[in-house]
Image (tube, rainbow, N blue to C red; front, side):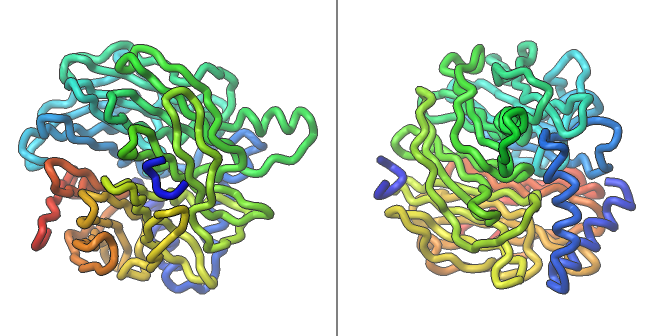
Length: 418
């Protein structure tokens, strides 16, 4: 592989206390405590049931369509709603429900509704449907072929219908218009338990639709031993394949990241280790990576880890089978970063951080392929907020940030400023 071309007030207070503990680096106990509530789950993993902890439900997905219309998807009671903006997020139209029949919907940051668009005006939405058994779920999908005016009845993407974890869905569309959906899956955990054999973490699966979301082929396994509760990053590659980047459990318990290229035929390349921080922890940090492949095949990625005992969000690039130019973001408090490569040279990273008073939204921009960076502060809020999400349209980067107080906000990142 030479290049990639072959909340509630109490919940809000808990988040701030956790952020302060991370910054102080006094102990990793808060991270472990948060993660262990999702790490074992009796071997089933997932979200659902009466004992599910209260969390913020601001989780929102976003995507531009071919005409520059910005679509957002989010939870509205027992529905997934979509809204569209024709002025780059300054205003949004009326909400439309994607699922006519009410059902449970996960919307807690790492497991939020997602939206993607097709080359002919299609709008695709995925979400995780929590099931009654704690920490279980199904990956749901709905499509619109009339520009978001109406949506077909939702379907479950995976063929496996066991009451186990199918969670943390990710969706992306390749240049040919094929729809890829990936998720974290615990069927192999259940099978190993039945054999009384150990199995660390979960597994990564995916499915592909070649008919604009009408049907899916799959339950294709990418890898065993993934982390249980960190989002997956999916991004198209210049050669028409799809790249997946996820947090993996490397023996004995290092929570670094792995990558693989996914074929539309269900054949994935053998996974490769992508980060080497060697963070050893028997828990899931709920902190997935971001990834974007530039036209020259370079993978630009951003990820959270603990290096030498210090919580760190790093940015780096993967090329010629090697991790290159790894460096921390210009903010020791950075959390939940995202990244986009606009071209071979212009790269943008965004993140949020808590300074003790406000949660701040910040960005780093590079105009030389990630060799040098400039940092800019974009916004702040004194209440709860979703993770920021980077988008691109017509060669420009945009940040969607939903906050409890300010609502949906979109910031354009230009060549000379934000």
